[in-house]
Length: 172
Image: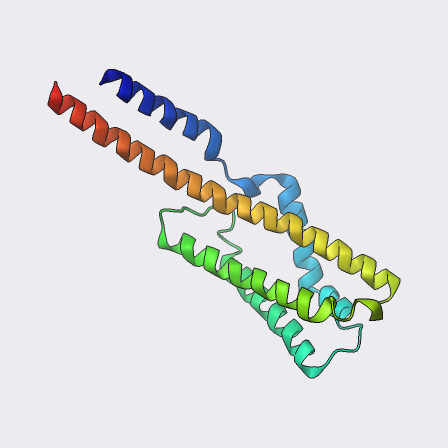
């Protein structure tokens, strides 16, 4: 029985050491997000995307995606570096983020890809840069989400350890 408790405590300590750091405290992640945010908020990204002749529907897709992003930033900018998976707001963050990602994909697939040949070489290079930056941000945010989930797993493991310790003490 003591071996089971020792093994559980070892697992809990390992989880504590390996998974509970906040991903977005990394300076390069924050700098990358800041640059991307400036490019979107200044209208630079929309201007490059709209430099090709777009239909009214395609313009609407771009505008909707930009508005979705702006709403996301306004809502989450103050808490992006601290999200607790135990709180209901964490699921809301993940849901809101997934909406932004879906809008990004819509713009990429329904607008940019369809008009790729109509962009200048310079704008294609900028669009590639934006895409690379978006991929790095997505990796960072998914890392944050995963860290939050690992934190929740750590809390659950602590609770399990308490339950097992309680069972063991009742058996002794």
